[in-house]
Image (cartoon, rainbow, N blue to C red; front, side, top):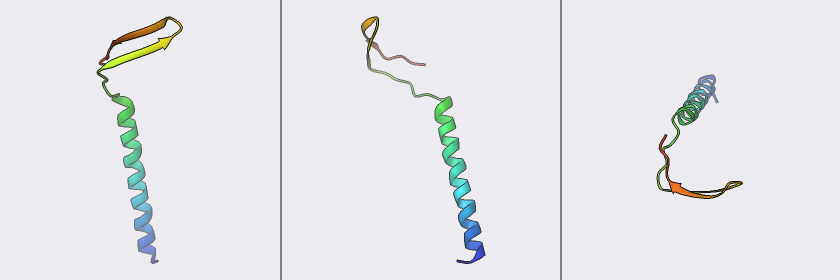
Length: 54
């Protein structure tokens, strides 16, 4: 491999890494809105309700 190819591979890996981290950060800041039926079982008992939108 020539030196230029190795440099391109390193730069490409960094670009992919930054894109993946950016996507995860976006997902963390913008949680999905849920809809439908929620069933929770906990110490207070059984709770059945509609979906919540944040």
